[in-house]
Each structure stands twice: as structure tokens, then as C-alpha cells.
Amino acid sequence: MSSVQTVDVSPKVAKFLSEGPKKLFIGGEFIESASGETLDSVNPSTGEVLVSVYAADKEDVDRAVEAAEKAFLGDWKKITPSERGRLIWKLADLMEENLEELAQLESLDGGKLISHARAVDVPLAIDHFRYYAGWATKVMGQTIQSSTGQNMLTYTRREPIGVVGQIIPWNFPLLMAAWKLGAALATGNVVILKSAEQTPLSALYLGQLVQEAGFPPGVVNLITGYGKTAGEAIVQNPRIRKVAFTGSTAVGKRIMQQASGNLKRVSLELGGKSPNIIFPDADFSKAIPGALMGIFFNQGQVCTAGSRLFVHKKVYDNVMADLTSYASNMKQGPGMDETSEIGPLVSSQQFERVKSYLQKGHEEGAKSLTGGQPLDRSGFFIPPTVFSGVDDNMTIAREEIFGPVIAAMPFDDEEQVADVIRRANDTEYGLAAGVWTTDVRKAHRVAHELEAGTVWVNCYNVLDASIPFGGYKQSGYGREMGSEALDLYTQVKAVWVDLN
Ligand code: NAP
Ligand code: MG
Image (cartoon, rainbow, N blue to C red):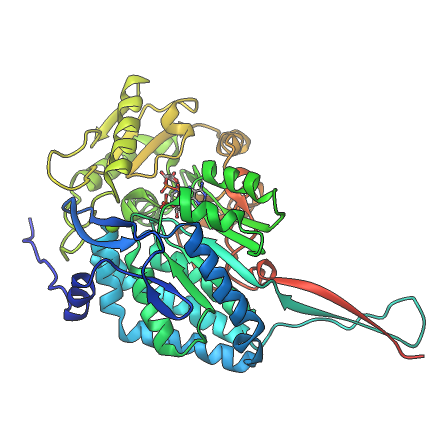
């Protein structure tokens, strides 16, 4: 077993953590919450408090709206698309200069593996901003030949929506902030973003970089606080014209209900229970690591996690043996230990949730081949778990667990694949799916039949700023990333000019 290699906390991170409570970033300045209330940010690897942050409520959201509207009608409006693009690019450059600090905050605050934060979260977030920096100069309308006469000039403009509210979860705090901010800023909106109470730190650090990049005050407002107070205040505020949310399906539904009161635009990226299907003709040197990474990456706290693993019965026993052998040897430890291969869950609440799913799995008759019981140590550790003997109707096969838990199920179609597709689609979710086969015809046929916003063939959990991402069915609607995200943050105006 390799020894522990705990990362030295960078001096900038140490300073950042020593200056608490951390303030809200509103109107270009760091300020205390109106109520003076704070909440604690906990290190999930130890269960200890890292630093406290101010908890925003309605009054702070109102202040942020004030600042954002002022920027929207003032300085931000005067800035050219080219200059917007340069500011977003500058922010990406500053993030790159602070890559280690951002990665350490992600690891300390959310329990993420430092190696992953450095290689995945922060680089993807930087790349996301660069991708949308390019779009700032490519927002286009059309001229349209209408049938109303020769001398009628008709054209469309894509205009920003205005003040946009964004609410993000704790599983990829910095990356989710980037997904939300990139397209919104490129298209000329102003933003109020609320991070999750469990992981407020990287967004606040990002606020320092937004300030340094030179964005006009009020264009980007970053608040921390609870969903019930700060989150609901965003959704209820009629001057916020759109809300983009990533998180649980339950909260997504509540947001829709509340937004119906003021008809703000809503886009939702919600949960999943994604099927990952291994056919007997798969390349197992890719399928086995792919299935493992598909569920254990980020401790399974990934909305696209391949949590329902369908394995053809011909290869089922071998696949189970490989998965179990790998999972039982994964080194579980603190996020900041460079040798850890899997870390803790984000919070004691998430730990209790996943623990209760392990219990349900056992009670309903599934068999854990490895894992299956929480670890008896400080921090919120659940070991990588492989459940076999799972029935499609068991709770662990139907509900999103959001932990490192595989529900494995055999399937046995010989020639046609209709049955496994039916089972894969038998869920209210539709975020992602995986297919492992070397038969190119089968790969595409199955990909077309699966009800999911993303289908990965012979790969899993691959993301890129240029590729649209979002859900079918109750996994939400609207597409982030790619050119599709521009639609979320613009509205089309038709202009008619009678030239007669
Ligand atoms: P959640 O409650 O949906 O939280 C997501 C975000 O919404 C957080 O910023 C949260 O603030 C905020 N929020 C909560 N209630 C709100 C409300 N009434 N109005 C407006 N905003 C509100 O998710 P969670 O409780 O942290 O996690 C629970 C489950 O959600 C997970 O186990 C998982 O199944 C799912 N989840 C999915 C994703 C995804 O990427 N699709 C991400 C995270 C979680 P607070 O931080 O203060 O709660
Ligand atoms: Mg934390």
C-alpha cells in the first residue's frame, strides 16, 4: 500500500482560509450579509470546519439585483462583444495562474481528490471560459425575406435576457460555476450565482479573480447561503428574468412552481439514474475501467453516474469479478492525499443518505460483492460498493443514490437488444447512458434508442465545452455547453422596417 502524500496547503489558500467569515461578492466588492448570519464550510475528509462564510438572504439578493441591473443598463452595455470576450479570456488566464489554489479549495471544501481537481475540474472550468470567450463575438441574428412586400426589411437580433440567477450544486462547484457563467457572460447578461452551502469557497475565490480581471462591478455577483433563503429569494425575485439550476429533481420541481409566479425562464439540469450497458462483444480492456470510472469518479457524486450497470449474462460473472477486484483494492483516503483513489462524500447528510441506500439494498435482497458498509473513521467515507443480484424494481435500481454504488443487473437478449433498451429507458430520468460494444451498427442503433441527453459509446463521463449537455424526461431541460447554451441566455427580437 502506498504511503500518504498530503499536499502542502498553498500560502494563498492558507491566507484565504484564515480570513473568515468569507464575504459575499456583490457589486464588485466583498461585503457582509445584511443579517450578519454565517454558515460553516466543512472539510469532508475530516469533518472539521474550514472557515465560515456569510449566508445571504432576500435582502442580499435584492442588493445584488440592484447592482446587476445598474451594470446591465450601464457599463456592461457599453462594452463591445470583443471586449467581453477578452474579459472572459482574462478570467481564464487568472484561473490558470491560480490553478493549484482553486484545485486545493475544491479538494478541501468538497472532499474531491486533489489529483482530479488539478487534472479535471479546474482545467475544464478554464477551458469552458475560453470556449465561451470565443462565442462573445459570434452572437448573430438573421435577415429574413418576409412575404409582406419588397420594401420591408426584417431582421432578428439575439439580445441578452438581463439579470440572470444561477443556482449550483456541490459536486463540481467550480466547474458548475463556469458552465453557468461562461455562456451568460458571453451573451451579455449579468449574473447572480449562488453556490451550494456545502462548497462555497471556490466561487468566492473566483470572485477575487473576476475583480482582478476587471469586469465592471455588478456584472458578476457571487453569493453564498442556503437554498431555502438565498436560493428561493433568487427564484422569487421578479427582476431576475431567468434562473438556471443544477441539482436535485425535487428542488428543480419546486423552482418551476415558484417561478410560475413571475414567469421567469427556467432551465434545469437535474439528476439521473444512468444505464451503462456492456454487450458481450465489448472491448473489456476499455469497458471495465469505463464502468468503474463511470460510477466511482467523484465518489459517485456525478449527475451522469453510470449507476445501473447492465451486463450481458454471458460475461456477467467475469465482469463482476473484475469490478469487485478493482473496487476492493481502491485506496480510499482524504482528498488532499495525492495517493487517494477515492475520497469522502461531501457531507454528513450525503453520507447518511448513501448509508440508508446501502441498507435498503441489503434489505431488498441485493448482495454486495464489495463495500456495502460505511467506514468507521472520521470524515464521510463510504467504500466503493458493487451490488449484484439487483432487480429492476429495487430502490437502489430506481433512485439516484449519488454515491459510489453500482447496481449491477444481467440481461440476456441474444440477437436483438430491444429488452435491455426497454429496461434502460424504464426510468423517469434521462440524463446520460453508456454503451460498450465493438459492433458499430449495434452501437449507433442502441445510441439512437436510448432516452438520454448524452450517450457515450465505448467511453463514459467525457465532457467538452463544445458539446451540448442536458436531460431528457425528468432530468431537466435546456442544454448547457456548445452553441445550444447561447439559446438559454438570449432572446430573439424581430425588427421590421418599412422602407417604402
Ligand atoms: P439540492 O438541494 O438540489 O441543491 C442544489 C442547489 O440548490 C444548492 O445550491 C441548494 O442550496 C439549492 N437549493 C436547495 N433548495 C432550494 C430551493 N428551495 N430554492 C432554490 N434553491 C435551492 O441538492 P442537494 O440536497 O445538495 O443534494 C441532494 C441530491 O440532489 C443528491 O443526492 C443528488 O441526488 C442530487 N444532486 C444532483 C446534482 C446534479 O448535478 N444533477 C448535483 C447535486 C445534487 P443549498 O446548498 O443551501 O442546499
Ligand atoms: Mg465544505
